[in-house]
Length: 246
Image 1 (tube, rainbow, N blue to C red):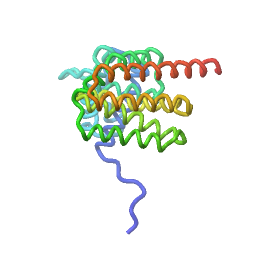
Image 2: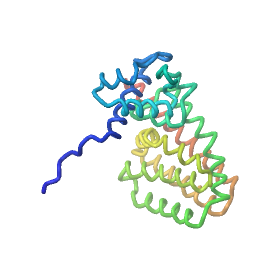
Image 3: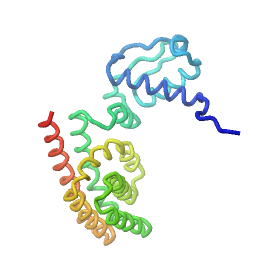
């Protein structure tokens, strides 16, 4: 029997569609901060879904800090800058399709510089032998890619930074880094087309692996700062060139 081309829409899928639609309405400002949403029953009728789908969708929006729900009053739109949780970070990036507004980009660059060097220091202290082998494996894959596949190099670069985060032993930072994955790979993928940039990044990666493997915490933090400064420099040059071409 031939399998159907598409699967029936599940209740979970309807909830996800509801959440994505209202995220966009709120983040775009089409639904204003402080605005009260219609009752669940009315929303269900407008959207043609069941009331439980609406209720579960609103609960999910509340968990992300986008709305507040009060019994017998309903849902009100929050100022997500004050109420938003880390779950909202992925939503902001998804909403902007990986292209961040200048203020959000600056914030991301700042937070990386604040966090990644200390976690590189912890990686040199806490890394396991298995993680060292994994890091060497990434170096081998980067060498094999040889600049011919920017997407593969972009993915390997993210995997490298994620593995450093995991090696730190901190259980929260890898989750935070993963929430930035789409914007991280979107931006870094653009300058991995430049072989000179690629060669420099891979040189830094080798230095980082040596520092982490030898347990040199100070060196690991220093190399991570150099990696971030190098990436930021080329990113700003790339953005400046794009602005001039508009």
